[in-house]
Amino acid sequence: AAKTDAEVLGVNIVMLRRQNRLTQRNLENLTGLSHSELWRIENGTVNARLSTLARLGQVFGLRVVDLFHPTVAVNGAAE
Image (tube, rainbow, N blue to C red):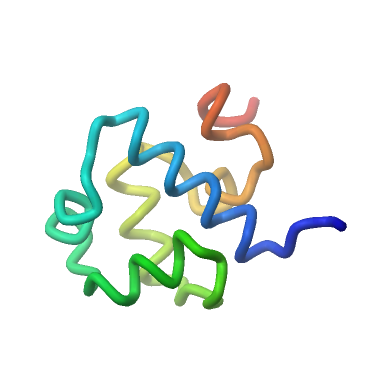
């Protein structure tokens, strides 16, 4: 089945976090997200607010739209 936007985002955030050798706690500190909020995002069970997406994008040097690209975590920002 096709992944929802929230699921694609979650997979990408986990991969980006691991590629950048960040723990969940590191990413929580960098973004100001709570542990439960980050957990829900990574597990694709919540539609994140735009302000949250902007903070995540800033940490990884990506535009918000790039966070939803199916291969962003593998290849970096889409062209």
